[in-house]
Picture 1 (cartoon, helix red, strand yellow):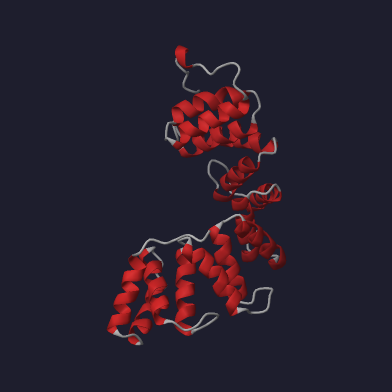
Picture 2 (cartoon, helix red, strand yellow):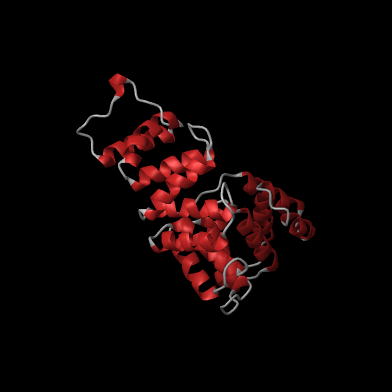
Length: 262
């Protein structure tokens, strides 16, 4: 199932599991998934949950090995049942998308919750989104906000954007344009196109931030460059209220690399 290591490339018997996992991670980060799998394979068979997750993810995406949904499900299930939060989240993704298994949003949510409770940021974000939408599982805005805040604290950008929308749309909270703009600013600076368009609109209207055409156009241009189709509906009105010099200044600012906040 996994590529065998060359005889002269066997792991030192004295290496700890942590050292072997670090070695495999280095290989994976260098896109050498075959070497990573050669390390993860024996560990997974020994019951190392994170190795089981990693193998499952490789089978799911065809990384270093032929894509196989059934084997992805097998290994991710083992990892999830062993309590690995990333395994739980990846298995949740499988059930949410219905990849090689019948889609099951309820089961996905249960797995996201298990991973979220173990501190996994992306799982916290996904659970928050499902709770806000309230279509696949019963909605709960208070809990959705709780998980979004935890995810945002770990740097999960979509959660920051969602918090901005919660305050903007007064979803379970008092409407707070300042707090909405604060969260959008955090996400926009990290490259989120949805946050960029909302922050641009906020600057255009002076909602939660001082009205500033240059800042508005700069963020709207970034959002459009990132593929947000909503940006165009704000760009033309912003153009109409600006001088040629300010438009050019905004264009130049939009072309600068983003500096992610510390």
